Image 1: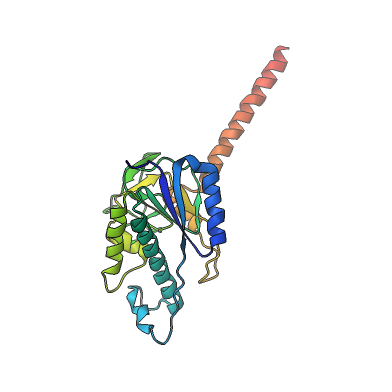
Image 2: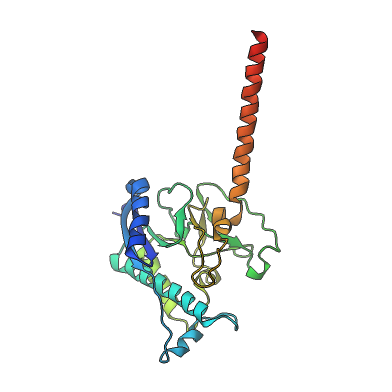
Length: 258
């Protein structure tokens, strides 16, 4: 019988970082977790003997080698995670990257494989920010990805229901001679049919190890970019202001009656 709890695989550069993240998850969601495992991040090294490796990534012509190696390392780390899922023969598998952070309460495992965080963009990524997407997902539920209308990118929180799905995906990442960035590969192949809303996991704000710039991925991945954290806070503050005004009015009316 399959236990309806998560088996979590966290891709991290160090065991200390993994342990800190695992402790937070256990502290808040121990009843929903069966197992948490560290998957060491993969840092590939380009040498004089493996120069052809840079041609394995199908990317634009002017992408720097350092960036290509980093993206290939990401694919390699996810392969390790998928292999770990298959080796452990686990169900309800949640693969998290180091920068994944819980934003909304973790619910029971979904009934289908899905994104549990990401960024919703148009089918043509180059149109991001130029084309307005009108999407109204149902809360606390799986929502179907309409690939002719939008797609989900980023790979910081992927849920695979079965170990068989994990090994099928692993084979698909090994077979091609070249691959696009992992998130683009998943979207192009339409590996995931659903996304869970709201985004349980977002990408933390952090400085890129490649460009040393602070990214905006937290904003992009908060509710898949459909709403912004600022909008949510403004709504709550407006509600708070209304409540304060109502309370103040009641007090004034009470004083008048006295």
